[in-house]
Length: 220
Image 1 (cartoon, rainbow, N blue to C red):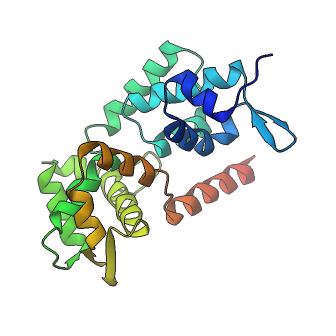
Image 2 (cartoon, rainbow, N blue to C red):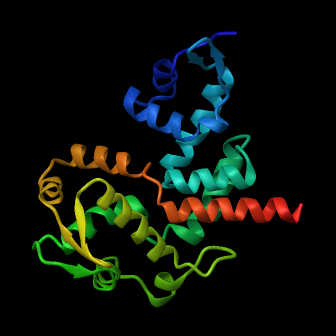
């Protein structure tokens, strides 16, 4: 059995070492691996799983959305299953901006260095993306949470955690100098930073996932 390092696994599926490492770490529980001493090695099965995750990513799904799909339904078996999954998800979610698409507009809304409430920012983003009332209020399955507002909250948490915005009082935000600098970066640098921020997990989301897992276990 051919074994390989995390770097080699990343290269094999067409990701850079740093980019692949982030995805491998995030989906560690689902990617087959072998521990040898202090080393973690991967095989052909690992390649197949990571390629599927990469295809889901390239369809426009975020890491969180892919993780939720895999956790609920398992790893897709082939291209046709991937296509069906992304078709179903995209029909319900992708006419609503993804978290990665909201990050820069969020900063642009508050780029004048003034402080703004979260509700004002939400309304401005709704206008920027020209969302209908149905799109703005559409919720996740079995949940009352608005998909759009949830994604804005995830973005807000990531921007705050990365020091691009600061919460100067409850639910009132202001851009930082780092946030202004990010807006002036080139597109490649901005894209790399967005990918880094996508792996920051909202603690509310973590608690919700754990609560749902506990409910399922109790139901069994």
